[in-house]
Length: 228
Image (cartoon, rainbow, N blue to C red):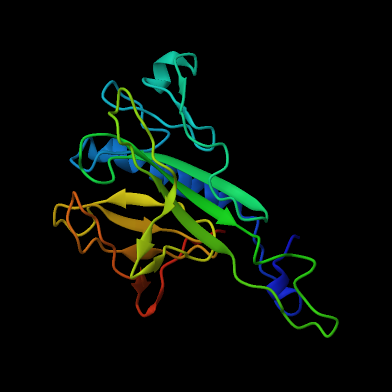
């Protein structure tokens, strides 16, 4: 059993949870299909119909009509190979197409699961004390200054909320949508420990401004994916 170093002693926490990842992926894939096209312009890598443009997770490949072309009709996005340049291990690059600022052009966002501060075998001193930092879950925006048909992407910048970079505990898995029904684009993030953080857009659809994150709670405890 592979365990997190935080739980090296005592009850071990299994952190390799493929069931949770599969369920989360399926839900993220199916919800946009069930809802149909909406005004937010959110597109994820597995939505496939004639009106959507698809971005394959981690590959920076745009594939219209994904289910019909079997990956033959695709275009490599003109974005940097490496988004987060700080030294350290990156376990996930989570790419999404989204009209971030409501200008009609699809931008690119990237969730970064960064382990550089966390470490692993070097995370304890000789007395067994934890000496490293947390997992990092950054979200980057590459704003499209061109059009959806002919994109021109600006340099990647971190998305901020409450005056600080969005940074849940690793594996941010950013999801964009109008979650409070006020007409603009909010942000929901997951994290490595399976809880969810909601970042309300207190700006507008065309000038997003995100409040500090609020952890989603159910009955006074953090909402989480439950694996069996």
